[in-house]
Length: 514
Ligand SMILES: Nc1ncnc2c1ncn2[C@@H]1O[C@H](COP(=O)(O)OP(=O)(O)OP(=O)(O)O)[C@@H](O)[C@H]1O
Image 1 (cartoon, rainbow, N blue to C red):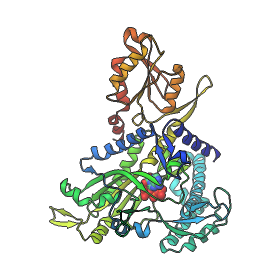
Image 2: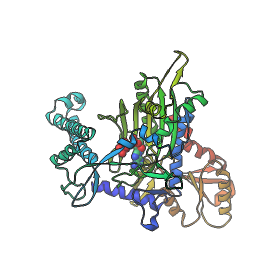
Image 3: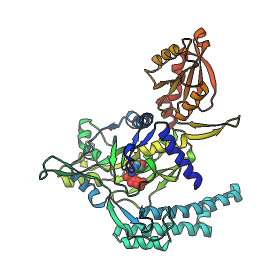
Image 4: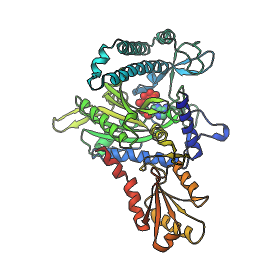
């Protein structure tokens, strides 16, 4: 655990030191769970957003994008169920005064049971080798059966307590399981109560006519209310999708995990409208397609897993998360939800307007079903950044810190370095930048010895360093150094554009999804 904590601390301090993420309003000691993206962070974030947008909007003929406003008519949130049900169960520890989500405490307990079962499975795998039958083992090994059935029973009890509003049962469960404050070990808990996560605000200047609004807690509703506008003006035929990226706001109860759980964050969502009855086919399609998108970034297959929801939200008939192995363990990165016709129907009822698709083939109208993919941009950022950050021991025993970002996402693609600050080398370096800057974000650096400049670019995640030396003046060649292998090649200046492009082009990376 200590090691995990250290890794996470390194991630946070590296993000600050190298201009990726700063705490919000830091000169006033920051604001809890709110962060600013710095000069490099904003580029990485923009590249992730673009990588997602291309894979959705550009690569699917039947997906288009919108950018709806953050403010929406307040009835939107009544219809969507957020006013009545967008609550989290909170619990306080009376000794430590720390606040927790009761459901998360219980889920973490269950995760430990799952890990114990997993350990038994791994041990047996080692013992039986090829002859091992995992499915049979899970259903027959008494210890594994006990762990998994206990996990199931606990989650069911929690779900029934939360659904029925019987929050005493949820507290009783926490006490029965002996769950302690993860930070202090105290078991002195308050009662569990529900807390609505939406931020309220007001629209309008005069006190009597001002309208109570919410900052949107998800981007999805902006898509639903525009469903018919887009369908008609875009002449879209079912199945089709609407994609959107943008800010969402939640007054999270516990926000102690850096940009994993923020109060202001960004979502990348796509709602796919399908014919009722066909939703499961698309649900499976999008689960697979979204996993492929993540895998295309090359952070390692072993770092992703699906978690199929046992307990479904009121609007869903199937739901799964893609979980990522964050520095603090596997947690939700993206959700794929089959949302039925819940949202469109609710908006029909509350607005009195029809939100239906007219099917020319059958000459009839219907409310489409929706399959949604929803990923947090900030969580994507954290997944990429935390896996990329590595300490390496080199052959000479020294260590180097390197941020092995997928080059397609790296903020700066190349740094151009004159070996020395004289003899006309800086001028040549500037000429190279003049040529490359039309296609790529490139940087110039002439300060310090070249070895130190390489290390700095490694830590910043820049895939290439291009060094201009005296030979460059004679034959117009430079060295190009690769961040990950540290290999240096001598190449002609005219080849640079192609070499970099081959490595960083979205086309090449996205094709890995095939
Ligand atoms: N507070 C937050 N900070 C950063 N990203 C978030 C936050 N809440 C949700 N997200 C992102 O938005 C995605 C879709 O939102 P959704 O409502 O499905 O999340 P959720 O199930 O409420 O997440 P969690 O269970 O972690 O609170 C999540 O998979 C996550 O990547």
